[in-house]
Image: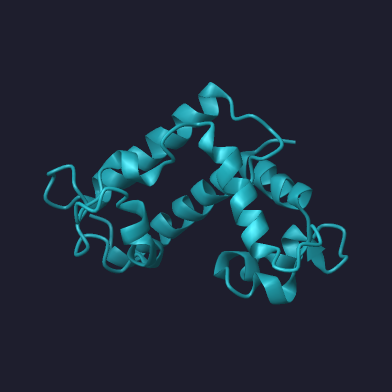
Length: 157
């Protein structure tokens, strides 16, 4: 049996990658295979967290998983007090590009088309990887640089 700390670190990695898939898709359509693979990974993650096997994640089951704890109410779109597997993904694949645009727009507070260090302060995963994502070293992250990160993590070009 995996230790809770191992599960938490794997969850964080899966969620971070999943969020990048969601946020970094504005310029490239997601293929059916990529979407299916992503959904399978989310399903496995959901099953690991669903300790009682009732196909619902309650606030107590997501304890120790910062992303899910912080965003539980937002993900629980219907206000039921629990999450089902469909709550962990956008309602349809077309929503990925819109969510990516919304994320970038929200993060780029001054609207100059680049996320700088100060603007990245509200996004811990972005702060930690800022210099790696800023591939041209100009002190800012463009949409294309976020796309490149997603491609690298997915094993693409």
